[in-house]
Length: 412
Image (cartoon, rainbow, N blue to C red):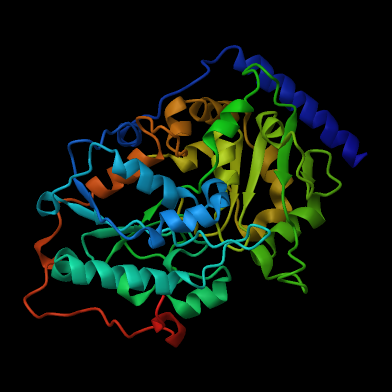
């Protein structure tokens, strides 16, 4: 009886939405300041100097493992390539607003493609030692006008398990730098104030090639593909995703409104375009590529990650395009989602259909106006001008170069 009721409700809901869609425009621009910020052009508002490092810090690492180009941490590689030919680049460091150190610290993958962050701290320290001894610019601010792309699970804490990441903390010599990172969670030791939270890398060309006709009905109510339990790293359960994913499975594995599974079909991208809601729960970290995929494919993201700080939050109105569900409320997901009025769903879909929203989540090659590269530059431009207090007095030192785990101090 209960399954029949939900099935009937879903059919009725779909009918209402299909009728309403015909009476509403396909897209809607974000109103107010968020829309203006999203469409900002950073060119002319800042200049970036790119340090020329030995290839062992970037190109040679990539040559050893080209898989890094398609990994969800690949933003560090593409940001480097973008800046080399960007009009914001300056070859004169004396006129630079920002300094960028191109390090591919996440390009260390296991045979199965999992990133190993354990060498990253030594690699970053080595690069900073090099630039601080070869140029005067790091020493005058101890990195306060430098930015680093650190797309690890927990950013510059350089560990994929939260407890260990918290124990490590942000690499001490990066404490004054601006960190451009995928990790974002309020009141967390791995997120410095002033950091720029970015989306993870998702392959733009591949996603574009899998687009289906816009008038395809969204016949799936809730969609999710991924792990519910990580038996290898969390055999007792409850720690992985703070139990949120397990709660999704236990409560909704037999619910007809929920198309959820651990299997990853070849039609994954197409299925997301047929869904109304796409679950974006935390895993080991709060973020995942599902957030990018949901926005690009117009599927309303259901964000289950308490205190998450989302990408480009000053430009993308996440509250308007997504649905936030507290981790403790996961057992009530069906009630929460079926209670959302059709007109609210339709507005979220119109906002998601705005091309500027999708571009902001992607790192395309070549770059496009308003894409994730430009949103990062916008974030850096909004932090200008630098306060005079960032410049150190002659002989002044703030950072402790010998702080941190002993293993981080070994040569790289």
